[in-house]
Image 1 (tube, rainbow, N blue to C red):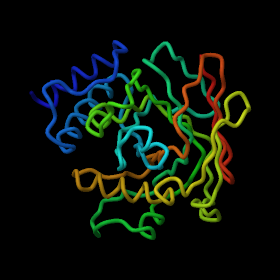
Image 2: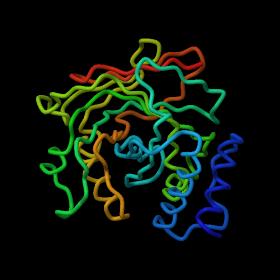
Image 3: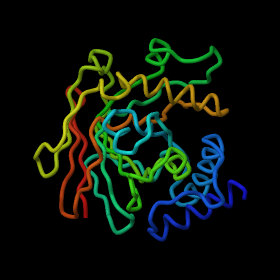
Image 4: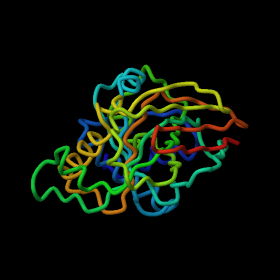
Length: 258
């Protein structure tokens, strides 16, 4: 079975709000799963426009424990799925909405990989701004005991959109590893974390992603938004609730669920 055929089956399942599943025919390894993801994203782009950013999934211990996967995964973020805060999310369009509290970094220059693997210094030089953000995920009523990295990757790491707060250009004045963050639902704190929960430092998510994309013959481009991964466990809000991600020094992002 080709990557395109497998992706078409996953895409149809997502459109039908079917329970999250594996690509048909079996998948040999992560490399094949990413080929299916590329084909899956190509189908999504017809509805939601070009890729304008990326998410890095499973960058915190709490998220790795939730999914039973001990390494990050990536997924594409499409233009029409980027929403400025305050935003509204219609759950009728999704299998099941999950929300994640994150730090988003905007890339200021192409990260070609021409000089080899990225480091903390070389990656930091490529980041133009930071902000609080919320990732919207459609987990399609997933059975988290059965999730695998291959299932996540092939399904574009479950991304259903992002909500971004105002840009902070002077992000270097902050220690992003030390900043405190929280997720609130209807104004009540439901979970907290720090920048260090994201692979030790949010920049490490950019490093991991840039090197991963370069290894796949791709790259982070100037203007791309990188969702660095949730510093809290995914929450599942109900219609009528408002979710807020608040990050020390970076402000907040919010979404009303309907």
